[in-house]
Length: 326
Length: 212
Image 1 (cartoon, one colour):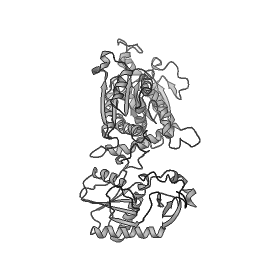
Image 2 (tube, chains in turn blue, red):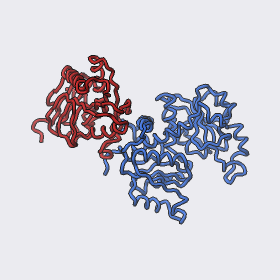
Image 3 (cartoon, helix red, strand yellow):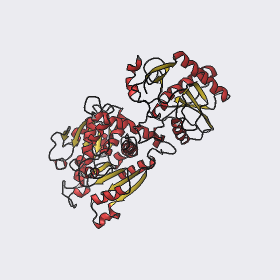
Image 4 (cartoon, one colour):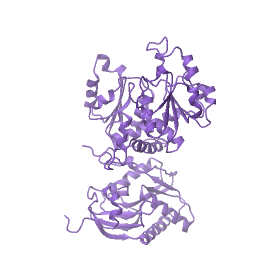
């Protein structure tokens, strides 16, 4: 695996994939990555959570969009593997002077880097960058397309609570599906791992077409909640509410919250062992009530912690163990 | 005979100790069995002797921790622990060490962690590192680095089932089951029932007679 641009790339990690006389299996590839992640969880629990596995390698984070978790998580991961990190953020760079993405990538490449983590508001940006560079490219979120490491860390977190097999695990992904790359990557990964995924939200926040998506769709959260094992809440992008600057998809936050938010009353009707997840950043009181976010069924902080280990595993797979260096 | 059974292992030098650090000599596919070095009884006696030597050298087993290196070193360390418990009555703490992230050939060949590192508190203890085959010494170098990040042992000793020579680093084993002179192109194969199919054995494999 040279790049991680989309969840489907993980099929290349299928241990039996090459030469087994069949197509590489996405599920086997994802599970192999999740197994590898466990080794890095152990590293992260040490007094000195650092190994020299990527010493001498350089990892650049190239972020054209704001991010807290993903950027810090990748940089922490790279540092714990002994790699050097460089951070590129649009606000303080020559992009302000009009430098193009291509020129920026070529500049970074000329400094000698081994991995580039790309976040961009345009779908396909990471794929484009990959075509320009000899470094490994990791998609840290591209527009409404994909966010594969988020899907990996969610799957890893879920597996820790639901056993190694996620077959038949019922997951409701709730909120702004249409604008969510997290939803797309999670549907692909969780589905490959055997989960039953239901998408829930107002019709205005559903993609216009869902042909071929391996999911069921519901517009009624209360209808779905009693049966699910996991409620995965997406962030409501505040610019899409009435009075905001973007396109308006629903009238008020209060109305959204009353119909599709996980309030304390709704949480009380969940099965006792139903888990709550959120990719962050949370809008407390909108898609998730504060007391639910802080309850014992919430895995939000665990997701963040596992994010570092998952990204260590991804960096190791792409830059460290990837076979012969040419 | 069992060459066929072990076909997978032959194609991939495998998780066995130093085999993975060995020079490129012998992808192994065309090697043939040269000598049977240990059968199951020989191997058991060697483990028993090493267990006694560890206890003798350390004047008991109370401050000793046995740390096996994946994959077969872990199985050997468990056998040593059980043997020491049987005659000394001390349950020696056991650990398992994965050295993948400390290797010096990362990026030169595919490397994957073989298992989770689980090492008890080693501060102030005598750590006996356990592996199946001592060859170039590079795995031991990686293991020392890995170990010293987990604590400050009072001393580190090395126990191996087979020392096959050809060191590339100044490493020496404290406890050796068998000193086995080999050629670089040969391959020492250790089978342990916990890890491999079949009975315990140590075998020397080499290129067919007449091959270059």
